[in-house]
Length: 256
Image (cartoon, rainbow, N blue to C red):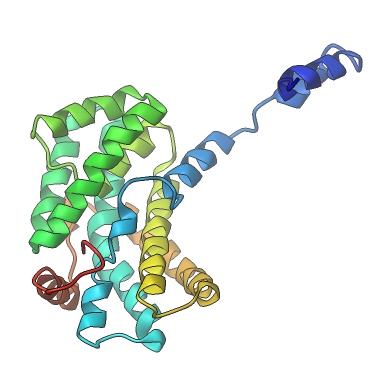
């Protein structure tokens, strides 16, 4: 019969002294935050990122990207798109949620939503954001997540993905810098997955793509945590154009 390993370990540890069991089962400081980040960035976490190409499919449809230009495109999107917009919003929402300033969280949410010019990008941001809030409220059981989920459900805030992530990371105690970096990595992993499905890369080279993005993620994180609300907004006009064309394409593999 299967026995709980923790119970069995404790029984063995009792033979070694009164403090041995405590030493075996004591939590590692800070590991909980890492585990939350790993869970939220895992491709198996059903937030809807798998359905998005983040504009990449539009570039493919127009013949505007190939294997050699894939990494430069990702780096530019990080530096000029996701970083100044979504990552900045995440940092602002994280700080506001940690301070229980829900008006500031909502203001950041509305500002980010307004900066997304295309219908496709707005729908993708809110669909994944609402899914994240709904699932995180059940998974983590944090009051802050449940509270903001209610605000979004009542349509008092748009519920964009980046702001939702900021709320979840704050509620689970993940530091803001780690939260921003983790979400940027999740974006890059989703982008690499889309590139794989669009046959721009293979599995091995997709991992190289992620590794090459690491210094850009660090750079983008540093910039994002230093911005204020007035500086929130992307300047990736080519991505906006490709997204607008993509939403009218006769056949699409991805929702964005």
